[in-house]
Length: 467
Image 1 (cartoon, helix red, strand yellow):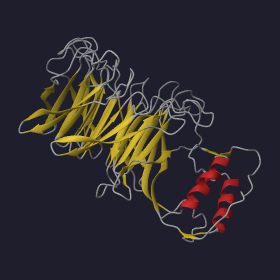
Image 2 (spheres, rainbow, N blue to C red; image 1 turned 90 degrees about the horizontal axis):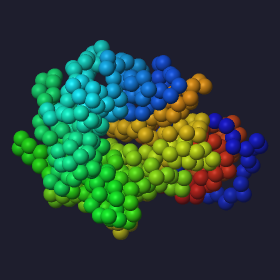
Image 3 (spheres, one colour; image 1 turned 30 degrees about the vertical axis):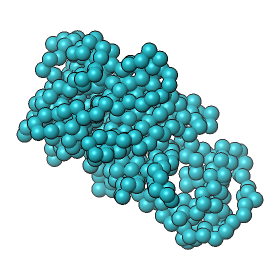
Image 4 (cartoon, rainbow, N blue to C red; image 1 turned 180 degrees about the vertical axis):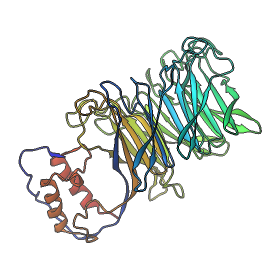
């Protein structure tokens, strides 16, 4: 950590008052992961997966998936390196659930050009066992089966997108659900929404949790003035089949919204991202879903805000604490172009019971740099976040890529710098000392540098207290 100025910033003329410091629940960076064999342009962190004790990180150029497991100290340690003999975008998508890992390779040629396949691995005591590959029963060339994949937490089902499937017209897209039997998966059902049309590219984003599956078609166009507005369909498992339960859209003027470019579902809650700096959350209500939030980034965010969305319900209770994690790989801050960002929004109930979704955090990394592209690869599980910065330079190797691990927990009140559980002038003195020493604890705006804005952030939080 370096200071943003050559000289120490003296204490501002501040009015202080005593208060009680209370612990706050925030995400903090606990680890960074780099490829064991970094290479120029490899883009380690292009896709990531996280579940329980396991994690996986994919590269772009070498088409390799590196897997990790939690060590005794909670840090992720390398486990297996997964490759395939005939790669075709191997690792463009991946997901971990139960004791299984699925990896999409949508440009793989098995019997037809770019038909796509999904590789399946099963967790053993020593690593990941190859269980072979799968494709759809009606696969054709250029389907791109494996565009996106997602496993249920119990590993009983996984869902696969094939964005260029042609069932409802050229590139209408298709989605398949596979069900587990023993150690193998079998095609259960193909999902073709009733209103699907040519060019929708259904399956660019898929998510499944329990009895609910969500599928995005970001190129759907239904009005001439809303080209590529996008659509999302929700399916519910009833009996032995999956039935269409809802069609979601939003009324945002203009073209190129790409609603549905990313989706997630957790315990009935649904998140939908766009390609135009918006993300939406829907809560289950009756037999359907109601929009609960529409969020946008703070200044510095880009149109890529929303191209990755994930829900974290680990802190949810009585209608509060549902978190939305949003990636924005081209966000720019403090002169760093396309640094990237990961935002946290948390559901709160106001004094009159109104629903609020304030941005509570922007996850920062140490020593950020231009074009890191943090937030394209993004995974969330039970209070943890794994975020890829695929174009980050490593040891002088351009765009070798890095992935960062964040963990949510009770961190002491940030402005209680002297740790005495009270807020006093001595906390200002301790903050000044940390700032002068280049301590990351003084980086209050999370941009990886120490500037006057960190002083302003400290003052604001001190004035509000930690109640």
